[in-house]
Image 1 (tube, rainbow, N blue to C red):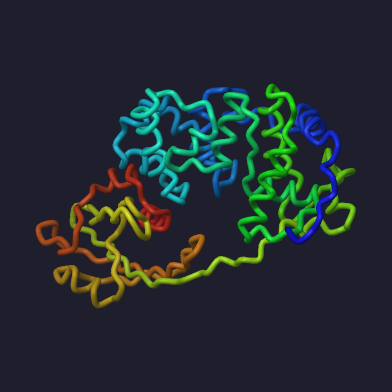
Image 2: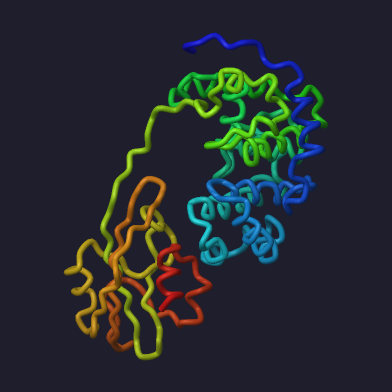
Length: 347
């Protein structure tokens, strides 16, 4: 570690617990429960997704899959259909696999220890700790993006988190900061989440509302936004995709299920081609090509330049590429990539 840290702030956990009780979020639908299924579901949904968005999806998901057994027994297409619009679809595929493993390996009951939870698909160290802390009172530290920001600022931890040993050291500090009493773990864990989501923000540190500002090294230095330090940048790539929007006289759309790996894995999509020539060759009977204005769809690591071409034709002579005709009232229930759903919905 490139620098020597000052001692841990006195009473950190106590201040956090007291603040959460008075000022933290109390009424989110996945709070005030020790049901690991609901906590797990919310934790997965909240990865890379705003709370306001999850508030719409969470109750719909529970209405369809009220427990882990119902989710495990569901077809993957139904799971992806309900997830459609949340993005990062590997979460939904892992969610389904995880439910099946909970049933097969643990008799339908989530394991109680973070160490065991981590062995399930889609559950990393921080998510496992959150479930174990909220539901089973385990003294396990969380360290998602929001919490990294809170702790690095409070501790003045300027080591580069792109370096594995530095992040490992921060994990150890997060564990050292935990409350001594296991009974405080749910509220303490929620306090860290709340502080990072509502006060200690990436581009604005609202230090006047922070319960630990007096002990915050970043505030004392006068530059909270300098933390956390992470130098490694995402390497972005781009791809140009031609989308065949084939429609027959009955208003059906030709959709194909994407492979299990790659872009939009496991979802239903308009057929994707690398060039206009390949697209036209896939449906030589298609008539009246209409070239939709192309646009850029931004993913985490990649920019997709989408070029849809709408063509009409006969159901008897559909495209030669893999796929099937889908009724207009049926496609909305399938798992579709967000740009495809928007395209079809605005037809």
